[in-house]
Amino acid sequence: MIDSKGVDAGLLQTRYRLTKQRAAILRALEDGAHLTAETIHERVRAALPAVSLGTIYRTLDILRAIGLVQVFAHGGAARYEAALDKHHHLVCASCSEIVNIPAPQIAALALSIAQDHRYSGVDAALVVTGRCARCAGLARNGASTTGG
Image 1 (cartoon, helix red, strand yellow):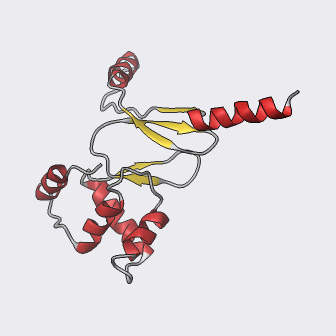
Image 2 (cartoon, one colour):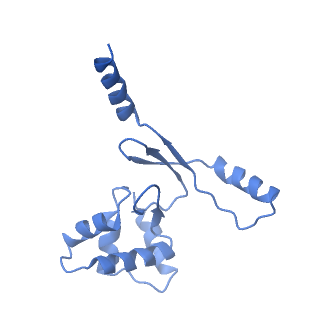
């Protein structure tokens, strides 16, 4: 979900203002979904029919640079989200569902590893893959009906 105070603060700290394109992109992302630029383009065109895909990409780059949008790329097209908090991702290998997971202990682990190798400016992004409960259930049910 988008924290409107965070959006306002993020824009106030930069030279950028909240244009109708930026506002439309943030609205497109407000449900917390991880969307491709093309999907964002489709959603934004409902309000701004003349907006181009190029404008979407340029605006996403600006929103990323000022910290209002994050990008997540794993096994395919980059996906964008408006989450302002640090988090990691849980990805279903079957249906590609993406779930945000807080994992504050990852930062300490990353820092420890980096210090062991004399790295600085540390950041970490964890992606955990597996099967969501729905897909695991489908696999179990499919196996039990055909296996015996």
